[in-house]
Image 1 (cartoon, rainbow, N blue to C red):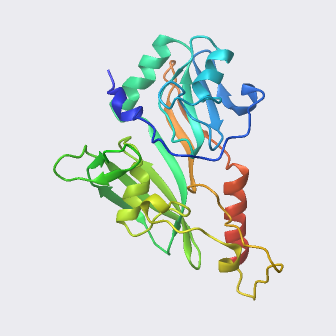
Image 2: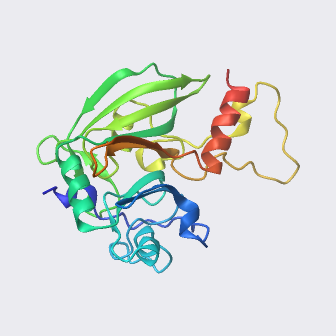
Length: 261
């Protein structure tokens, strides 16, 4: 069976903005059949509550309230939004777990990074080890676990790039640190060198703020979204399920499109 440690790494003990309360789990569902539920996870909402000691909502808790036998087949970091698969029964869980183990599942993330890059199937293969306090990771060629990510440029702007990231393995913060290694840290990711992004940076004309006000960044979290998940259902049908951008990520990309071409 799959090494669950790879997909259920302990979530860092970091303070985050609270997620908006989910009133109806059904609103998150983007695909459902008799075996699987696939949702578009909102940012700031924990995948697991028993690991994070989160006193608020978690995806697992919401999923079990919707379907008692629900099990998460993988997880997303608390700040990360996007597609997340949940099994409705043990057989479905084993079926997708084996696909993860054999690397037959394709996960595609979108990220906005600092800097302009032309990534054309650039592969980063660098081992990752957690820091002692569990809040972040480092590249450790001696003791780290193998980790590989492939990157493609979706669109380059004047000072930023929208990147597609395909993790081959599933280590904690893998995409974030591998992009840092490419000198392309994710926007609003200070842990790995990513700077905030402001509208004043994008506008070519003079940008005026009202007197006594401070400009806020366009993004208040790591600009990373799990955009799609491809795998085989229990009937062997191959599906690719896409999760639309949440509002904050959509606004960021629209502002880049408007002012940075």
